[in-house]
Amino acid sequence: MPEDYILATEGLSKSFGGFNAVTDVDLKVRRGAIHALIGPNGAGKTTCFNLLTKFLVPTAGRIQYNGRDITRVSSAGIAQFGLVRSFQISAVFPHLTVLENVRVALQRQRGFSFDFWRSEKVLRGYDARALELLDEVGLAGDADRNASELSYGRKRALELATTLALEPDMMLLDEPMAGMGHEDIDRISTLIRKAAAGRTVLMVEHNLSVVANLCDRITVLARGRILAEGDYATVSGDPRVIEAYIGAGHA
Amino acid sequence: MTMVQHISPAQLAKPTNPPRAGLPASLYGRLFIALTAVLLVAPLALYPMFLMTLLCFALFACAFNLLLGYGGLLSFGHAVYFGMAAYVTGHAAKVWGLGPELSVLLGALTGAGLGLAFGALAIRRQGIYFSMITLALAQMAFFFCLQATFTHGEDGIQAIPRGHLFGLIDLSDDRVLYYVVLAVFLAGLLGIFRIIHSPFGQVLKAIRENEPRAISLGYNAQRYKLAVFVLSSTIAGVAGGMKALVFQLATLTDVHWTMSGEVVLMTLVGGMGTVFGPIVGAAVIVTMQNYLAHLGAWVTVVQGAIFVACVLLFREGIVGVIARHLRWRL
Image 1: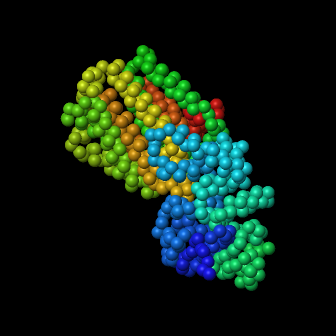
Image 2: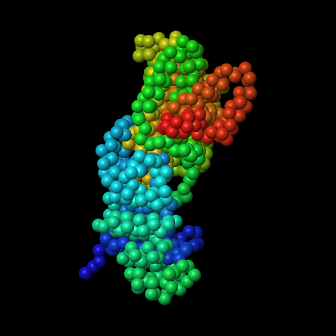
Image 3: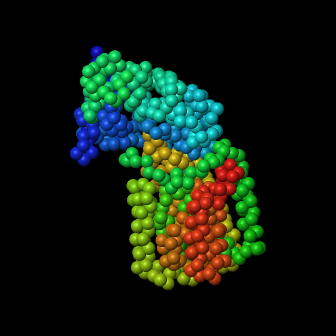
């Protein structure tokens, strides 16, 4: 039986000048999976991620999403197809309120909002849904504060709520645990697992224990190429992976 | 698409003590009514000419602030939309004999058209490069005005007739014209307030705050930037057109880069990204130019000193500092 892949790349490559950051990557993400992209520093994870989210244009190769070729689609365009990314540095809108942060995403439902002549009161219809989403990530009490006042972990939670507001089919998370303490890591892990119900998640992550707990499938990149793929047990037992990770914090 | 997070001018002056969110919207309403009341009786105490100058520049600064404070885009060539509109309004009123309302409308359309053309080129770049392109385009337009025949070079368009509003109200009396200018100014201010507090304004603020994130939510940032650029240049055009009628004069000064600098100064001194800041800034600068005129070239030095003090001591501008202390959004 053929597998159902939501996202698939074919020969995806990117070079900067003469440097090949990503070479010939055939990445396949199964629908409904929590898939991790890991690898030592400089393996090309972030480049790969930026290619998938269209923040970079590939030198060669194709990207298929939901059976559609998205190689030439803009980064705003893929969000409209239900493929939404997060950022390594927590990506909130600092001087909007927590509620407004989520509402800006909900606002997408009404189109592109070029109506500069209408009062923003028309957006109040989204407040209830926004509060619901904030409640899911435990931020309902902070709705009226500026996002800049939140702690780092809470900003990440807000970012997740904003992403979920778009009801994405697939979320691309760029190091969701970067720079976090233990408590926050547990919190966000739980949130991601909850959010992943009925969705596909592809995440770049450094923290291997997070990946071991959270992810169904792992792709290891090294020097811009796929080194190994499989579940955590398979990948962590692979001698090539161990070699690539020596001295790089392999647990 | 670049991944480099540019630092927008709006981010440079982030308030350290962020305003409380969810304030009574009526605060703006009350301040607006107070401002209107003051301006209605102001001609009793001050010369209408001085007040009209102030209002024209205040509207210009508000238009500029819409772009800088809410769009995060520092245009360094905004004099073009102001000055070109002044020329077109002047030409329409004097040579074509159109009424003041149509002349100013043509001025506004000039601002819009130029804003669309120049904005479309400039928004392709970010940060300082954006500013440099707006400056370069503005300089090109300046030399066009210097050479073109309808602008009359160094002389400018002089003795522009103020005409009769809608063919009825004679505007040659300063006190009558003052109330027309005031009405246009208040309408412009309300319009800007609405733009800022519209669904469009929300997306715009989101883009200013974090452009890559706004894009990842599916918003095409370039289009919003162009839209706000055109809105800003249109209102700047209205201000320029009114200025041409008030002074009955449109000259190279209006399109010169120093004018672009002045509007930046007004906005920063008053408080960028606040609704009332640019009005206060314009009042400060115009008052200085008026009452310190006997100092001659020293006015520029005083202005420079104020600007330096402003940047060093209170980067949020006058209204920004007040807003911070009261924890209000003004």
